[in-house]
Image (cartoon, rainbow, N blue to C red; front, side, top):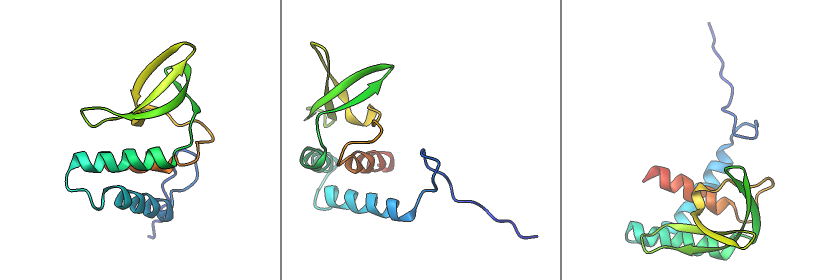
Amino acid sequence: MTHTTRPVAGKTGRPRTERGSARLDRLMEDATGEAHDESAQTTGFSTRLEDHLARPFTTDGLGLEGRVERLDLTDDDRIVAVCARGPFRQRIPILERPLPGPPPEGSAWIQASRRWTRGR
């Protein structure tokens, strides 16, 4: 008996492609390739996000909409989004923020950083 399988679907319902995975691998290598430790690797991602992620963009978290205005790197090597809602500002780890639809230009760097973080 022959058993066939279907490709695993991503969040959009479309099959994940090896091409997308290979792209994230290339971005991870670009951000971390010359780094000598985890702190330097995080700094590599922070730099790439600063250079490539379009801001500001609006995102939703816990049912509240906020605007990501800028990024920052904390003393404990976390990349945070400085989010604004009215007069209030809050620093939230960028990897914990959901991406809006459609995602901002350069958001592949967030996806690559998430993938790198899971693999550490």
